[in-house]
Amino acid sequence: MVDFLNLKRINSRYTEELKDACSRVIDSGWYIMGDELKKFEKDFADWCGTKHAIGVANGLDALTLVLRAWKEMGLLKDNDEVIVPANTYIASILAITENNLTPRLVEPNIETFNLDAKGIIEAITDKTKVILPVHLYGQISPMNDIQKIAHEYKLLVLEDCAQAHGANINNKKAGNWGDAAGFSFYPGKNLGALGDAGAITTNDDKLAEVLFALRNYGSHKKYHNIYTGTNSRLDEIQAAMLSVKLKYIEDETKIRQRIASRYLEEIKNEHIELPKLTSQQGHVWHLFVLKTKRREALVSYLQNENIATMIHYPIPPHKQQAYDNLKHYHLPLTETIHNEVLSIPLDPTMSDSEIEMVINAVNGFMG
Ligand SMILES: *Cc1c(COP(=O)(O)O)cnc(C)c1O
Image (cartoon, rainbow, N blue to C red; front, side, top):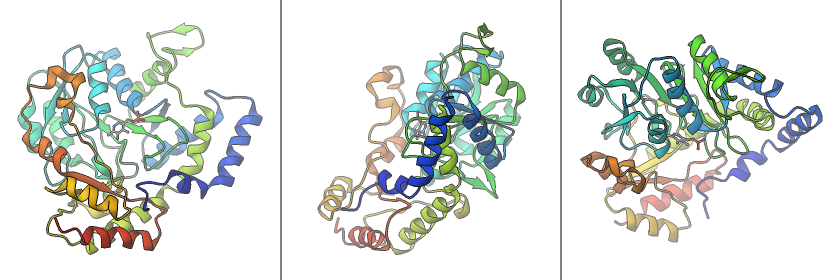
């Protein structure tokens, strides 16, 4: 069986270092908001090229807290609109509605699955205050265009980088383009903790200051609360795990890129459309997503061939039971994407023979 993503195999490459880091935290006697977090925040900010990184409990909180901070700073108010790709994972939308803001769902570019300039400009109204580009599947959105639009219409930009650690345009990384960015370190993400974790990156000192308080009950100083904040902290243990994993992210990304190039070159099947690249270097291949009109048949065929697959995602946000108030949207491209996409295994610990098994199996699909 070729697994979709074998987390045990990924992490077991670093077992000794992870255990050492774990022991270090246990022996320190300090488990929340200590030196491990400070070190990881500094190293992650440096790696992204930003001034600040603020560790939080998960990726959803990272996005939610940035919007919340902008409300505290007087930059946003209830019912302001946030432009967001309609085909994103639900977390991007939850961060918006949790803050009493209105998601403005926009059809993505059908080739890249990401927002593009045309879609954004058409969606702007006088209530629009934020653009929330999602670098889906590991490919960065057209951030030069998005920055230009944001500047012209005076909009804030919040990048959803949960799938895009290290994705870049000419080496300027995701997380260093917008006014702020949210990262997830969920175990299956490209930079994964051994539990839940997330971070915000920004170059804005004031925003960083508000966020450092918001994640910790709204307080900079114990028992002095400036905001009605929350508890969303990144544990010392997870920060220590992430410091180990951060050392290897570049190597793992190169392996992901090599596997993706093989798929792009060697998968040839008239029933299957391969993902399109805007800039090869910049894509970090969180997922390798095919499109096919014969998805159900392909899933069961690959299952028979012992190849695991997943669908990212089977139901778009505006079709979710939880979002009855979004069901009026007419989004044919998004619905086509949700009906046709299929992710095949892409795991930095895959062997050559596993990669070949996937290629041969997909090529043998008769439709
Ligand atoms: C995973 C993910 C999130 C949320 O991250 P969590 O750490 O699971 O809360 C947000 N946006 C996107 C696009 C994601 O893939």
